[in-house]
Image 1 (tube, rainbow, N blue to C red):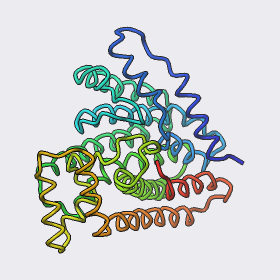
Image 2: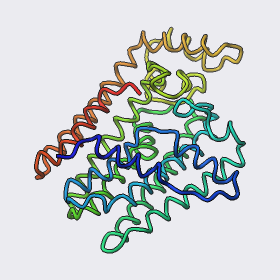
Image 3: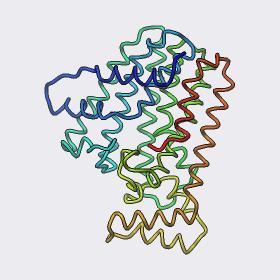
Image 4: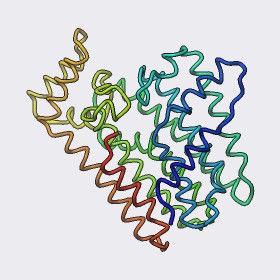
Length: 324
């Protein structure tokens, strides 16, 4: 019986074997760098796991799985520039090692490489897979734009935030699973159910990310702790806090949001204390668990042998209790 480790190890082996051109060096070295930084490889693993739900020939989905992971790293290169992030997976971000112009161009090349791998798929799956890939790729861009729009807005509702993370994060996991199901031979209705499962999984993943940015262990999480707080980033926690009717804490929070003279540790600790008092950390974790439960429920309704579902169940359990 296949295990979660079987899928992640296969993906890691394939990524280690990726070959990139050596010239021009400044174009390809950043790509090699970010692709070999590690990471959870959840998205490509989900592509393979989804295919394996329906077929023993799940390795047919490897080109699509690699395309998904390469595309994901393209988004990280560009997101880190826009977010002014300095750490990714515990290491310096691409634009910090090279420069922003190099990072932008390397990111563009990474996107093209993703399509090259996707093009290795053959009919009858190629057309459906690339249609699903194009949809998720465009929606990820839409989500990123909404995220940037939020930076200029004081009030963002939880509903607006949920839609933003659905587009920016969740559809990539959902599309990864849908493409795996396409290659595995699932019918259209089952593909929709698999997509919905992935969407719920993605929502839980992002909400847990919001939580870990404040409460996680930096050594495990791989990103600088409190980065969202320092940058006044509209996360579930901040939005929930800003919608609080506790006027005293809201006033204190607004002071920190507008304050310019502070040390990073000072601001992180002060805002975290406000979050603690308002209970928004517990609130975001409950929301994440709700989405995980939705995903578990959908998986349970699928008429698929239990042994085929087991790796996906293990992954969902791992995501529910992850600390990195």
